[in-house]
Image (cartoon, rainbow, N blue to C red; front, side, top):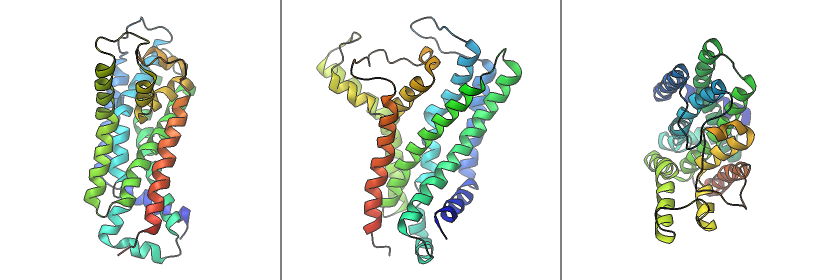
Amino acid sequence: MSLVAVTKKEFLDSIRSYTLLGLIGLSVVLSGFWSAIQWIPEMSQPVNGNLDMLALLNSMRQPALYLIPMIGIVVGYKAIAGERDSGSIKLLLALPNTRREVFLGKVIGQTAVVSVAILTAYGTAATIAFFTYDSFSLSVFVAYTLLSALYALVCVSIAVSFSAVAETMQWALFGAISAYLVILVVWDAIGSLLTVAFVGYPIEVGELPSWIAVFLYMNPSTAFAQATRAAIPVTREITSFAFLKANFWVDWYGFIVMGLWIVVPLALSYLIFRRTDIE
């Protein structure tokens, strides 16, 4: 076997999961629903620009916020820990595979699985938009889909990293779920508590200390939103960071933060996995 073979095996094994198929179905329903009603969220300022384009973007963004991390966890947490629990990791490593090939094959294969889920859901929204909207932007659809695949890689990297260092699948699942809650709930909650403690409430635009702003910017979901604003400027109409305005930070830094969330967890977990005795 090789990296390509491990990736292919991982993809085929994961895509058959009933849980994954259920989440894909949920993503399709949500994307189709938001696209069909052509809903655009109310913002503090009037929304300008192509309303059809904004409605399409919002129909893709709604499932992306919560379901991409969830799908990444579902497919990623058992990537290596599941093999160790079943004992199949010994067979996998007994074949002419290095641990690096196994590790990277898991990451690439799982990311491909999540990307298929994303494309299926977004494709549903795009189909509805194409036939019912007055206008349809293929370039915006492709750009947002690619950005979502990058975000999927971030989520899969975190989940597989837990899977690589956990001794059991249960601990890998616990770590991945904890990461999901931290990213989507706890991180911003901590930021709010810090803001109230050091600034007070209510807070005015521009009053947020730089160190709190940096802390909030380092959230992977915030980085994804900022990278999207940088690559697709029209999304600024429906994505606002009212209090996260700092002169030293620009939207494209979101790509750097996402890159760090890919590289750092994978590098650290691979170093541990490479030195772990497989029993």
